[in-house]
Length: 324
Image 1 (cartoon, rainbow, N blue to C red):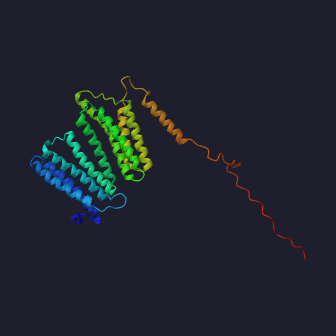
Image 2 (spheres, rainbow, N blue to C red):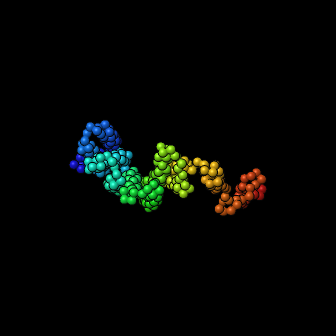
Image 3 (cartoon, rainbow, N blue to C red):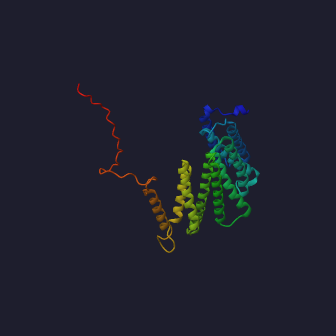
């Protein structure tokens, strides 16, 4: 059975396309027959689809280096189909479509374990990213389930701490396992972006409630600014585009939160002045002209070019024979 399910690498593109088509099929069935079919039927076909794709992913040959694209599609499809199947299982167990924080925790733990297995067995960076993001969701859901904090402040601190932890994991994995390091960095960038999303949710709630006055505060704005700059710096040094995109997204979130004027009116004091000083300092460092390490060069000639070294005169060895 294991050899029957082992994917042929020469047909990898077809296998990846088939897995993607299966995900779309499950989505369509789940949406179109949500009311017509019972939850047991939804569980049966979604679990069968998830089991098939996960078996294909686990049976694939382990190649050196990062896995090919079709294997990454299998890992992503396994995550999506596993999520649908587990959600249907929770529905069968009595949640009735309401995914509580406790349900999110046990579903997330199972999905994270599956993704980290793919990451460990196949050196898959995308699996590391999916697993790390799932862990962030699990931590937030666990805090909500156990402590039920009021307001979004607690969740922002949780997202910040998880982002710092993921950055530490990325630093440890950067040397020997760069794919996993990039996955952890991307997950940290998404966690920071989640902080901005909490303010966006508050703005939407305030809009419907008749008030949209949301003040992030200098501290959280600084977190988004430094986080975005760090992500872009990592993208440049590691030559990876993903952290750069997330860095830009965090900087845009900083811009949206900090661009508005205060209650006292518009003023250059604050972020405008600080950003001007930082910009000027960076430009000065980038455009300065330093003397070469060996000291000043040789003096130039009148024409402006350094003198060429003189060649020693060669001894004339021509003998003058007396006239015979």
